[in-house]
Length: 154
Image (spheres, helix red, strand yellow):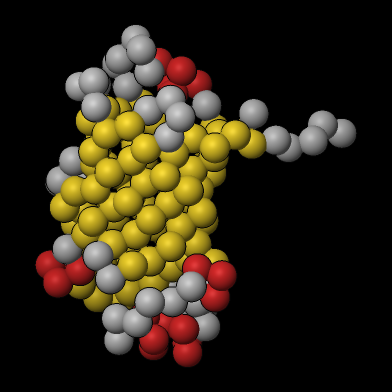
């Protein structure tokens, strides 16, 4: 059996407009909300830049207390290349932790589960290698948005 290995790709900080969230309501899949991305930054050993405004998360809060992320976003590298990303993810927190978060308290990411599976697309020759990797991320929720540590699966 081969061992799973990873390599650090980037830290990402995503700013969102929590106040502008569109609450769709209780659908058959769960409580649906659309959360807009307003900006952010990313930086790693091989790339650096900004998260562009205009993306979002078509988030579903399921009845079991977990949430399903469905995110699409674009970024611009510091050398002016565009990278599109989309990812699914799962987060889960106990009701007590969710209550603390809803009050705007800073909650340590070790107190909840937040994982994503980003996929990257770019037309850039320089960053073409992103089109051929699998990645995973560990997330954290902040009052301004979310943060991720992204790893390439080797």
